[in-house]
Amino acid sequence: MSNVGLLNSNPMLLVVEELTESIDPNPIRRDISLKSMQEFLKNISHPLDRAIIVTLLKTGMRVGELCNLDLRDLNLVDQDVTFTYKIKPRGALGDRSKTLYISKEPARGEIYNGEVRTASNKRKRDTIVPIDNELYHTLKVWLSIRPDSNSLAEPVFLSTSKWGHRITPSIVRSRLLEYTKTAGWHSPGAGAEENVTPHYFRHFFTTNLRNETGDRGIVKYLRGDVADDVIETYTHNWGNSVRTVYEKNIYSLLI
Image 1: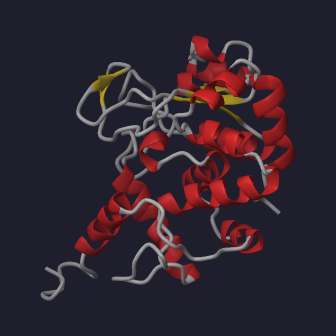
Image 2: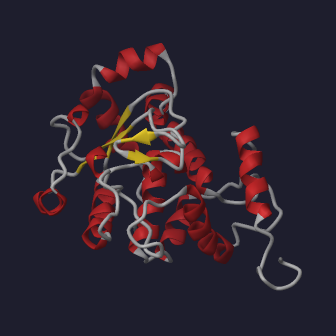
């Protein structure tokens, strides 16, 4: 199809790229500085694209986990937003303001919160992640123009091309590709060591936060990695450990 002009490029290159990352989730990767990432975000003005990328960078979640977020997984403590959508945060968020919840449960092809999911969460443990001011305001902008959903699950991120439908990992990758090509961060046929994909942002988050905090336990908790010491130390003292350390050390992206 590419040869006869029906496609501009070979779509299987993206498939092979994602398969490679599944086989080797921690390859040697392109070194992108915080300053370069800040400059990259300056060129992203579309509210959906900006919200997707900032969420990935600020939380370290996987692209499937981002696609599976529902409004009940956010606690923005914003009367306008909660009134507009009439969705109360799930009980696990309690009175923890400015937080989001990443569940381990959603699986591709299974019904979760009343909707069949197209992506799986590979997280081994439910996680509550703080929302800093940059992510808070970015999400508010998106929610203010978010289309009405065709799903009772009320996804956080909805397609603006396939109006009202939950975004999928392939949609996220496709939208990101427009920006990474322009930035010179993606070349057809190159591997994960060169190309910036949604999974790169998880790597960026892990590397930078680990370097800033010097605390592998906090990073493991936020990534949702299984570790008994992490669960014991941080789950029961979330406010004084996770939130305090996160807010003190999370990098600024919007300059």
